[in-house]
Length: 330
Ligand code: PMP
Image 1 (cartoon, rainbow, N blue to C red):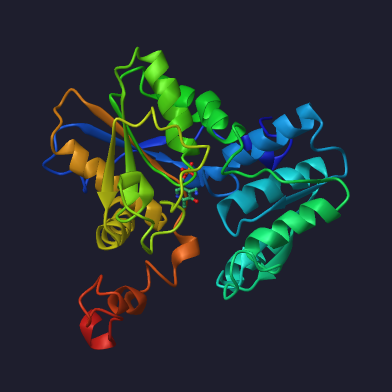
Image 2 (cartoon, rainbow, N blue to C red):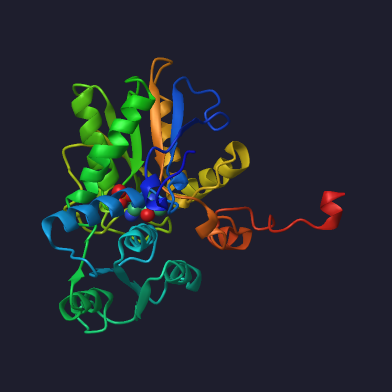
């Protein structure tokens, strides 16, 4: 018999798949690391597991403790799944603009979700920032992972994602491409790949146009989970050789093509990373092997990227492309 003791034991060891259609006319082999096949559905399962285990080892998180984090998305799911295995409570703080579906996912794993008003300044006692700090102070046994400052975030990628890629490509990877949010993925994976290859692997960040990583000021963009308006501690500025800015339109159009042409139903930051990988691949040769990391699946974005009306409202699609009629099909 072959089975895991718990779903949380299945984090990592995600597969690589070749991109075929989107890469037509390009010379290098382009492989995607499919992180939605993690048990919580995203790359964030990796950091959740390592942050929790390190906090247990250091005594910051004790039996029966409560994990408090301002997150509405993938990190919350990873933390809740690992907390379930280990008997911790979870409280997630999210702004009121977060969809009910996303909140319900977290509640389904047994987490409590505290919703804060978006329309108050950061110094207001009910702000997203202040509420999570207050909960940490007031809940007995509370611990805040703080994915933007926790060194275990990049460390998890240094110890898992990086070694996996080196092994899976038999040391033939020449370029690693990843979107940058907290910077944990690119910093940890990139550091490992640089070390193991003696500096040969090139590390390329993908960033929404307007974010600080590609020289912007944090101007709003629609792609979720990537780009920042500040420099988090988890981003190591010495790792990326290059940052490629990608527009929302390109990110979302490539995201849709990944589902249509490659059978990969993935989130908008995946389209962004692939858009950067394709731009990079244009200047590479047959000897290069590019790996692009796809952080999550597309189910959480059905009302946005995969909704024609939403896409058209931002001018990302021709205005008349929503819905087929019976006559179209016949
Ligand atoms: N894409 C998505 C959907 C994410 O949730 C995140 C994490 N914020 C990223 C990309 C970026 O990963 P990282 O935080 O490791 O830079």
